[in-house]
Amino acid sequence: MNHPPFSVPAEHAGKTLAAVLRIVLAPQTWKQLRKLIAGRRVKLNGEVWLDDARRLKVGDTIEILAQPEKSPQQHIDQIVIRHIDEHIVVVEKPSGVSTVRHPAEKDWLEERRLLVVTLDDLVMRQIGMRLPRKKHDPRPRLRVVQRLDKETSGLVVFARTVEAERGLGMQFRKHTVTRRYLAIVSGAMVPQTIRTTLVKDRGDGRRGSAPDRPSPHRGRGVGGEGGKAAVTHVSVVEALPGYSVLWCKLETGRTHQIRIHLAELGHPVCGERVYNRRPDGTTISDASEAPRLALHAVELGFLHPVTDEPMHWEMPLPSDLQTLLDRLRDSKRPNEATR
Image (tube, rainbow, N blue to C red; front, side, top):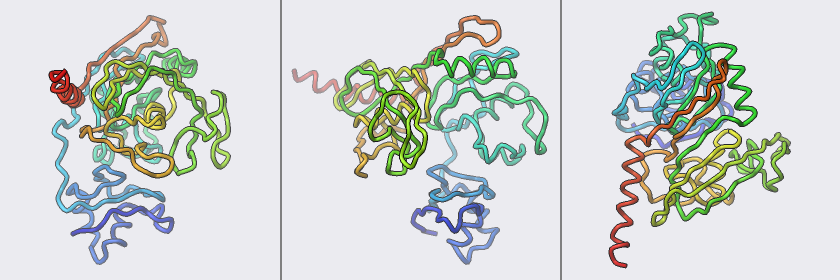
C-alpha cells in the first residue's frame, strides 16, 4: 500500500483515525484498517499511532508507511525517579514520550492508555498508583505543574497532593523555579536575553513572537489572540564549526518558548521539525543529522512546596545527544590540526 501523506480536511474533523482511513483507503475493511494501525504502519502528526479510535482535528497529518515502524529500542518501561515523598515526585523524562495526556484523552481507561503511553501514566504505574479502569475514577492521580515537549528529555516534577500542586504552581507563576536547558543549535550564537510576546499564531499558522515584538507585557496577537511575555536567557557553552552549544535559562515558561526564540533568531535547535521555517516559508537547513530534537532539561530547582526545603537536581545528557555532541566535536579536530 502506498499513499502520500495528507492533512485532515474540515469535513473529516471529529471522525476517528480508522474512519478517516476507511474514506481515504477505500475499499479497505475495518478489520484491515485496524490491522494496519496496530501493525505500526500509520503515523499521526509524525508519530506512530496505535489507537484507531483517536478523534482527529483539522490539519492533523496522516502518513501511511510501506513497512512497519520499528518499536523504540529503549522502550520506556522504567523511569528514573530522582526524588519521591508524599507530596512530590521528580523524574528523568526520556525523549519520545509526552509528559501528560491530551485533555481530550483524559477519560481514557487503562487498556486504551497503554496503547499510547505518557510520562505521568508510566510514573503512576511505577510508584504503585493504578491507572483508571472506569471513567471519573476517583483514585489519586499525579498533578501536572510542568511539561516538557515530547522530544525533549530532562527533569520533570509532578505534585502528588493538592497542597503541593498549589505551592509549586505559585513558584512557577512567580518564575522562581530554576530551569536550565542545554541546546545544540545551528550557526554561531552570542550570549543574550531574548524578550518577546508569544502568540498562538504569528501570522503563518504557527506559534511565535508577535510581529511587532512588543515589550514583555500581555499583548494582542494575530487575529486578536492574547499574547504572553516570554524571556529566555542564553549563554554559549561551546562554539563548534557551524554549531553552538547553549545554556538556556527560562525566566518564563511558555509553550515551545526556547524552540521558538532560537528559531526566530535563525538558529533552530538541531533536529527541529516544526520551527525550522522562516516567516516567508523557506526552510532553515539542518545538516547535523540529529537523532531528535537536541534539547535537554538539565537542571531543576525549587523550594519544597510543603517544607520550604531548597531542592535541586541536575541530569547529564542522554546518550543520543552525547553521541551527537561528540560527533560535532570530532568534526572540529581536522580543522584545528591544519592551523
